[in-house]
Length: 65
Image 1 (cartoon, helix red, strand yellow):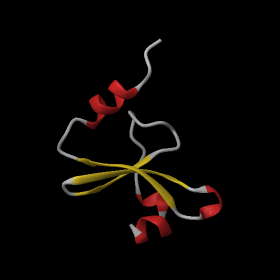
Image 2 (cartoon, one colour):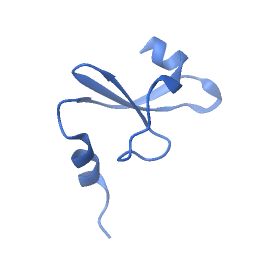
Image 3 (spheres, one colour):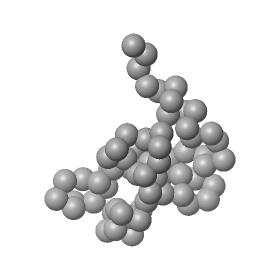
Image 4 (cartoon, one colour):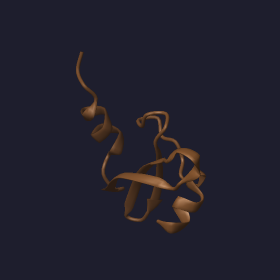
């Protein structure tokens, strides 16, 4: 987490995540996070089992219209 906070660009964007969120895999986990303003680190939002279908998980979380 310390390295990720120091270099938040290490994680990648994913099509199922909002634009300002990134994902970083540490097998078998995937850390979902966003960078804090002014480079003050990261805010970890979720740590999920990366073997799950993360696209389905995040699609289900979107509010219905």
